[in-house]
Structures are given as structure tokens and as C-alpha cells.
Length: 94
Ligand code: SF4
Image 1 (tube, helix red, strand yellow):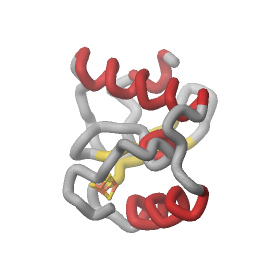
Image 2: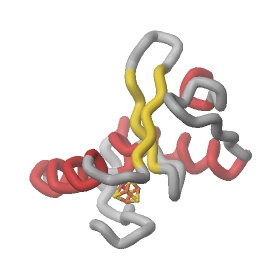
Image 3: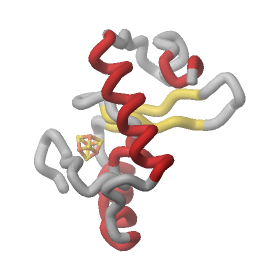
């Protein structure tokens, strides 16, 4: 988990996370991992495509070398966020 909360490895951008960002990210990751409030697979695919093409998506590398996509606006982990039915895009793109 520590790697997810690092603020120094965002590709092309230095960003800082506050406690609220960390809490929100942890809740999202937990819900996605436990499949709580999980969306239909087609909805997940549609949301992922929209986020993938969005100018507010950022990418960072974890300590293990995995690429992690996050939303610059809400700071959520996109892979987790799109799976949770009660989540929404802060810019109403989905
Ligand atoms: S949640 Fe919305 S603003 Fe954030 S990356 Fe996805 S489409 Fe863009």
C-alpha cells in the first residue's frame, strides 16, 4: 500500500496527497478488492475507456513497477473507482 501513497513518482507531475486523499483511496481500493457495490462488467469497460481518454488521467509507477492510473480531479485510483457503482466522475463524464 505504501507505494500507492507515494507523492514522488507520478509520471510528468509532482503531486501531494493529504489525509483525505489517502483515506478516500484506501476506501476505494478496499471496496474494489472486496467487490462491494460492484458495477456490471460492461459499465466498468465503458468507464475505463472514458477515463483512459481523459486529459485528467495521470500515471505513476509503483515500487514493484506496475503502472497506476489516477484521476487528477478526485485523486481516485481509476481501476478501483470505475468498479464501484456509487462512484461517479467529478466532471460528469460518466
Ligand atoms: S473520473 Fe472523470 S475526470 Fe477523472 S479521469 Fe475519469 S473521466 Fe477524467
